[in-house]
Length: 236
Ligand code: APR
Image (cartoon, rainbow, N blue to C red; front, side, top):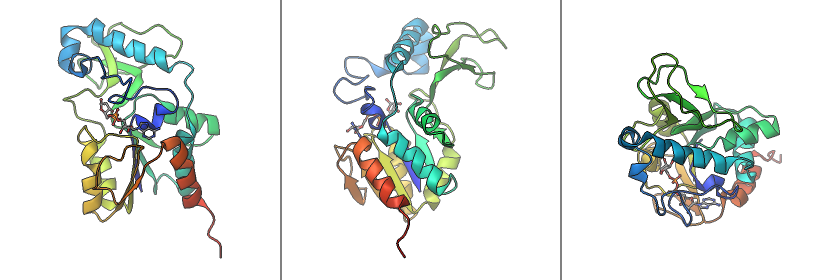
């Protein structure tokens, strides 16, 4: 099973999505805030945007949807449940920590909780502490500016080969809380279908008929019920 999550998974925790009402891209120009060119043109504007997003995450707690995904993987094992998220908020990790469970997660769009060298992503990354001021320094290795360790528009998401392999082999693909507007994630359902997987979407506003099943509900409601059913002991 491959599970892809998007901003809708964190909506119930009070984190704005990108394209919904109150979303990050409402009234803001994504291309002036989340591209390498934007960072080149006005690094402080971009760093202010990510500092604002981190500030908005202070005190935010994971919701039952995050907990359900962590529990699903802990119950069935990381070899059988591949968790991939487009989110950079760290809430799945927070849910695992709160539950005292292990977590194997692919953050294909990186993390808002680390910064990295803008010139060479092989240079050491720096964690951003929740209560620390936003790091605006330079790379300790080469002196280049530090940038958010997130994948911007026009950049290649992470672990794509591993994700594509998992999609080609999975028997179930579950897409949670994503509008399916941004590739390559938006094409994952097609890869899963080609591999013969049953494709299920959890989204109050179903996005595409390419899914075999659409659960038109919030992740915080649908996922606990799904996971309870999928992990219930089989009655003899
Ligand atoms: N449960 C499940 N889904 C929800 C919920 C909820 N409680 N609330 C809203 N949604 C759905 C919305 O219907 C929408 O389809 O979550 C989706 C959020 O879509 P977007 O705001 O487009 O976010 P996402 O799909 O994660 O964006 C993908 O675009 O801006 C880039 O890099 C950014 O990772 C992001 C990518």
